[in-house]
Length: 314
Image 1 (cartoon, rainbow, N blue to C red):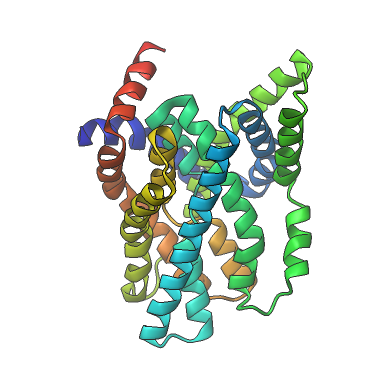
Image 2 (cartoon, helix red, strand yellow):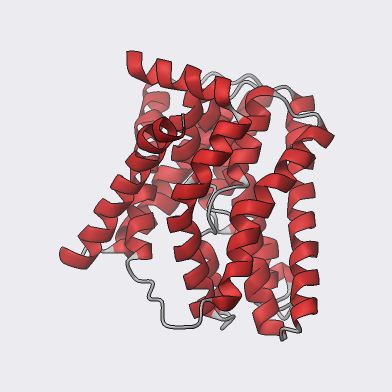
């Protein structure tokens, strides 16, 4: 089972990311252009399509939101307690919290859940990604700036995020049972299909710029919390919120993914130990190839078997 998970789910993800890594190092791929295309076109299309078609009851959506907020609060509190026990200064504390609570629910989490659980899992993964992006552009900014940035500044940055408008339009269209023209839906579907490979390529390109040039000691605490403690807490929280089936499997899986690459951008922008943050991103991404098969086999054995069978037929 573990070998099947590694081969069928994780190897494809790392192969596409490796192509991006190689392309930037050897061919000089421009990550800024590709990142802009993903930010303004591909990702909003993926979010709109997923939210417009996802089959989820309002009560289940409320439980999912409660689960996500509970996990975020728990990890922030635990990270602050550890930082206080280690007597880290403000910048190190902010960097540590960033690496623990900002998860790579997009570049890594969406394709992971698609390969693991099929299209239904990918749609739910997009919900978590949307929540993560909103959190990152608000609370994440406040954490990185050590509380020196006003909330209104963070909200203005959130207002410039196209994915927010894609989310709002999709939810309004669902609420009013709107019927969109088929050519428009097909165009959105094509653009959304491009999002996952582009995001994986970007992951590899972004990792290619990270260099390990410092003591790894402080980073291991963040690695342990992100890859081990976080999914364990997610299992407990999912049970407490009554999540079952695919919602539970995707929720726990998303909280076991590596640290988000965007945390390095925030750390660099606010001078919040950017080298330390980059090291944690690299370590959690590489080590996830060991931890993720164990997590997937534990939380979703039956769902994985269904997904393998479905991909084998397609």
